Image (tube, rainbow, N blue to C red; front, side):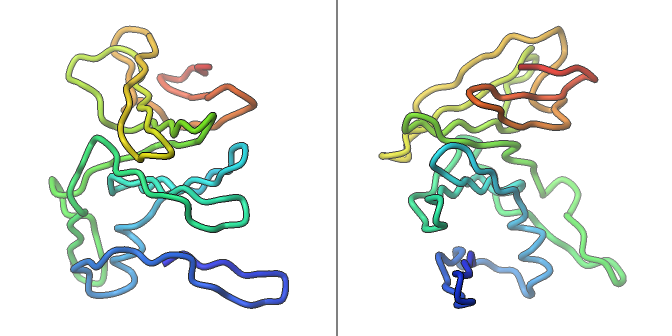
Length: 168
């Protein structure tokens, strides 16, 4: 669940996650891990191992959920001795980055076609939650979304570090 704490210390549940088959909170932390980003008038939460992006207003209230095109299954988490681990071959990476600009949700995911050179940035409608198109950003030979090690936004620019170089 996502909670917000106001200036008076009151905690409010903003939205709950869907029903799942995980047996404890550690498994849920692993399954639902991701990253918050503030850009313009919105906050996004990109799930690292699920095909979703949550969109919030700046005051933290949920606006919508985007189901991303990669449509991967829930991650499989196993217990080995005293550790919880992502099960090999049954857990997939999903989203690296998301932001909203001019009612378009931009998502940088791990979904790229085989033998693709360059970066792929998916576009979704904020109002309808539907996939619109993908932007193909040319890059050097054999560099794609899988090679991105860091991504951030500055003004109207998405910056990425991939293949040891900075891409704008």
